Image (cartoon, rainbow, N blue to C red; front, top):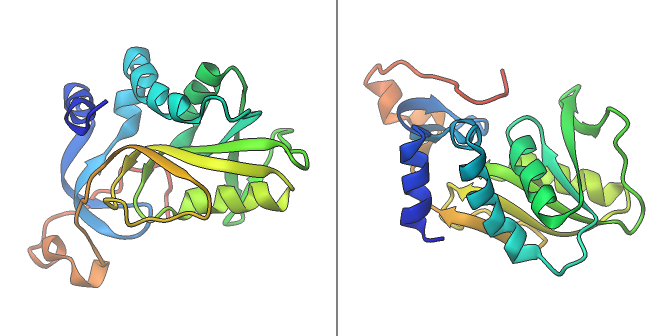
Length: 190
């Protein structure tokens, strides 16, 4: 899938938003990828997540793990395509944890999956959580890399597509300086 094909899916589903947004990372941006609007359509979820699954097929993935909430649907679909189980980590007292009876075994081959990466903070927390549990994190896959390839992980990474979307520190945001109201569309309330 080309970047243009992926962007067309985002545009067709109304998931590429323009405005003034506070990202989960705390940075501000004039563009926001609302993957939930894409992933609500199973045909788009399958197309996008098939790219991730195909990249990691043959690597004996036993479990796909994702950060809640944004990564859950993508993780579930990648796991379905790989024929494995899907679990998710969620925040409890500001820490990513496994709850709801989820666990990982020592040596279990795990793929971490997310919808959108800007700084990679949530995904890195999930990688660290899995590694501390003794799992072998064989890679990470995500639909959108907003960093244009600048975000790095200590395991092989595969984005469906990359964009270098400009993001600003809150105290240096030109949209704030112009008085544009800010929206926090993501799943975290912080």
